[in-house]
Length: 550
Image (cartoon, rainbow, N blue to C red; front, side, top):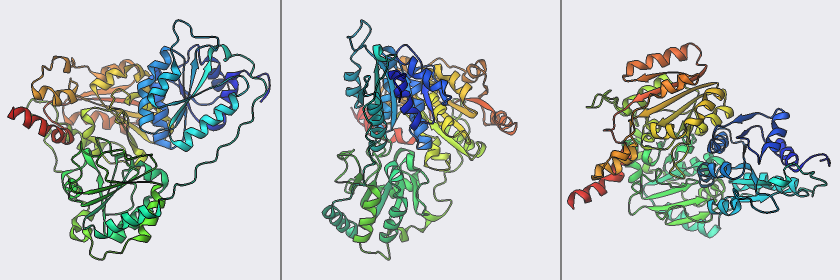
């Protein structure tokens, strides 16, 4: 570093050493930092809303496994980013977020206590000064990577263009060693596995990150277990005994087997509401053992918890358990058949004449390019695509917003995924409510996605609220949305697209694909409000029954 660099330059120099992509929206607080990175030619994607910048960096990591930089200004720029930042924190997505901050001399009328706000979200902030900018920015990168979480680097406004001067030496932080399981815990769990008659191994993203796939399959083969995965670990396990995605996105035949397990090993899966099908995934008397790097169980349904690396624990358990010759899987040879988890073709139309979303999802699987990255926003509609559309690997299907139960992050997330994997067709799946919320970054999607398809499941409503609350007798006025033609909005911004009212309208998409699939195609699908996703129907059944009885 030289004394000619200002504080923002020093932060940028460190970020440039680590990052291959930057996502941001420039303002007064990050202008010098952003200018340094764009002047040097580091790939920069501009968002049109600050939440979009963070969502792009989030999805970039999910699609590539590489940490990106997000950057926003202070004040309103920072507060605009908070929903996406909270999603990243709760989903344990590493990124470095560089923000502007109030001057060191004191807060101005428009400043807020950003450190306090970030702390409330569970996000750590490092505020740089002239002499420590290099050391603290390096610390942010190592913390984000080693601890799998977003870290904020904050640049006070009055220091942004101040000379950095001599820098404190950065101390590289080595990656943490794999956490070994407690031998006593391994022995106790092995004893339970030896007694189990119907063991199930559920692998999540933590298993993917630790490289536990082979070890988990070896463990399952030894005890005759069946397997399932979270959405983020889909297609990760190399075995024909995989029942597919667990929970809300499972088809009925594999779901019934998951529910009959008497012991479940959960390796690196968060057990969120979707994974557990709102608490109905496991039998009431099943032993649920979670292996995770987290400090404590992530769901009250967990009966035993091992804080350790998933791969190391799987290896230790394999050595400790007894081999089973006539295991659970031998009772269900149908699981290994290609037709086991296949639903019959759904009816094209609902009684109201609008499209059945099941039929649309089934047809899309055949039409969309196989080399795809599917990016799903949050909302009721998210139950269809994971059930019926395949993804090439765990990184090929992501769900943004579910960790924080938000909607509206899908459009910018698709941009981040496309930047990470331009070799794949980016497929965004959104609802009309979330798409309207994120409309500012539709322009970003048109500009930055080289080949992408935006599918809007448009039921002219906030579907989740309709099925959860209107079904219980609440007035639905605020739940309805005047129908918007997103294909027309896309065309106004430079995309192509069509309003889809029948399956035959997919021919327009097929022609676009045949012509080269360049740019963004917006498929606005007019779906019915009457079709309820399986996961939501089951979660609402007890409530509706109680309401009816009352």
